[in-house]
Image (cartoon, rainbow, N blue to C red; front, side, top):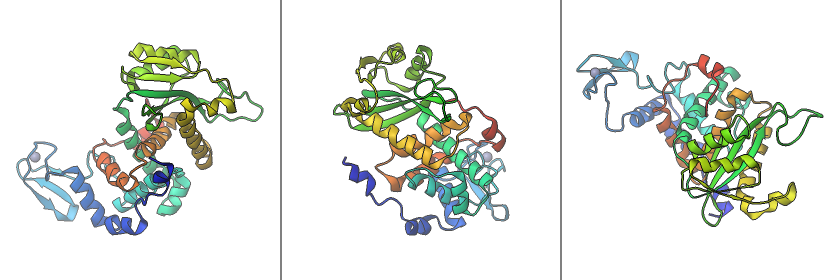
Length: 315
Ligand SMILES: [Zn+2]
């Protein structure tokens, strides 16, 4: 599809968003509909007949009497933030191509930066869990990249200290057009890390194309074929057609991250990468991104704030 098809699609207008999700009641109805598309099902006994405890906004199972909140067991569990704020956050996260900082998100939502940070990271967790399963197939372009750690006078390029290494892999059509992206933090560019990445993220039938960085040969451990493209370095490398899409995607991601976020703590890097990956992989259907994210959110288990702040994310 032409570049214009991505850039000029309509997306979800603010007016349509307000119409669909502008009130607490509408958001609650949406969560209930996506959580129980075939009607209420008791999480304790599987019973389907129920009554509603209106005052406490709970569903009560007629069989076992257990009371269930529609948000219990989901990423929204126990939140004190109204659902319409969560929906507005999902709107901004899915519709802004460059991503959005928690400061800016807090401003737009009218909540503190801390609250915005928590909302954003919980939603990024949803995106990360959605992206974890599917492996890339067919032709895949692979490249090494680093985030953060820019220090004045410091070492540049591969292996510079303070940088977080990650793998960028793009599944393409045989003609080289991008299909799907995976961005994964790795411990470093060594055989073990690339072998682990390939086993988790690539189908054994993959035909991997990369530059001459030695560790990329370890994709063979996952059964993939590997082709090395000698690229040289600098601008000449970026112009090689085989790497056109990896370089385009990486360029956009780096520009967005440096433009949007001042500094990213290393332990949160996988969630930031997941956000970019999620948007890129759904770029042809902006309008559907919000309902799909909600569908995923009600299927993602709760993530306590304490864990969110402390947890090392394993990708
Ligand atoms: Zn029950």
